Amino acid sequence: MLLSPVAERNKDDLVQVLAGLLGGHSERQLFGLELGSGSGQHVVHFAQELPFVTWQPSEISNSAQESIYAYISATKVKNVLQPVYLNVEEAWGKWAGFPRRSCDVILCINVLHFCTFNTTEGLFKGAGELLKIHGLLITYGPYAINGIISPESNVQLDGSLREKNPEWGLPDIDVLRQLAYKNALRLERMIEMPESNKCLLFRKIEL
Image (cartoon, rainbow, N blue to C red):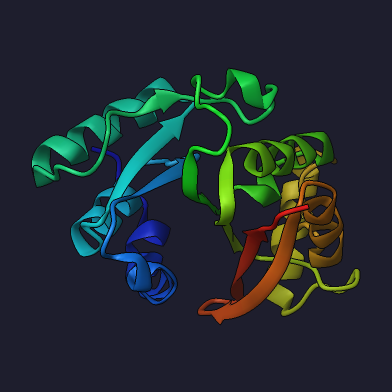
């Protein structure tokens, strides 16, 4: 079982956001896909607090998949499926075989600042295909706004990421809004979160 201190710190704040957004639909079972589930701490916590959602974790890393298995086993949650391999760099049709319009919610937590622009573009295209009408893509992490990054801790984070890979770095919210629009997703809300992070809520709309 891998342990992410960051996931441990933000899991309660994130589940409060999810409860507020999804709680009104608790009369039916929802299906949620998490992209880049990491250790598995988030998905089992969400499952425990939101039993009306069946969660599908996904990862490209074998060690992360094993950790997710371990968390599912340790917590004995019944509404988390076994993790699947999913690489958002691939075309959405290769995303573990999920059919079009199969997801009520897609989560992407602390992933986008580790993505190239092409990967981010593919992520929004995949979400646009997999979400049901009125479904939600929820992204969480640090962002730039109109090219401006703040506070200084996020400036330093952006710099360190770009040193590792020039194509990484904090994504700009306006760029994400435009990518979403191209895929019939509307940026509906932006929620301020602790530690200079934000939740962005993209709603799947009918064309």
